[in-house]
Length: 154
Image (tube, rainbow, N blue to C red):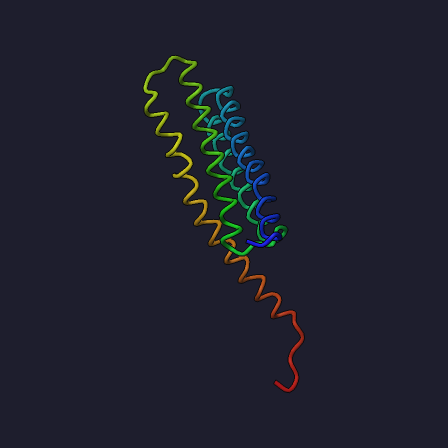
């Protein structure tokens, strides 16, 4: 890997952590708001808000990695998937800590979740981000070709 590639690669890690923490905050924050709401419709609204906020964050991260960081589809999808996986891991870790503090048994299930949640959310996130980045790349190329002046004398 060239020095330029290493610098670019090393700059992605802080973004991965930042986006991963954002997913964690969205999950924990909306869960706390749902827990504080009266049972019923408002709890569903907060759960839906978690999905919507996460989707917006995911789309924004794809856009950033594709256009601002200038990555091809794989280099766009990988940091997105890693951030989602980190968010999943942090949520699993929070659930594990909560279960320990609440005195709930079944620590084995929570240990499995520490591995399973990042995989279960990270792999689909990679595939969706890869497809989205490829489509964005195709749309950018099509737009650039349609805006280029016509060739004379072919």
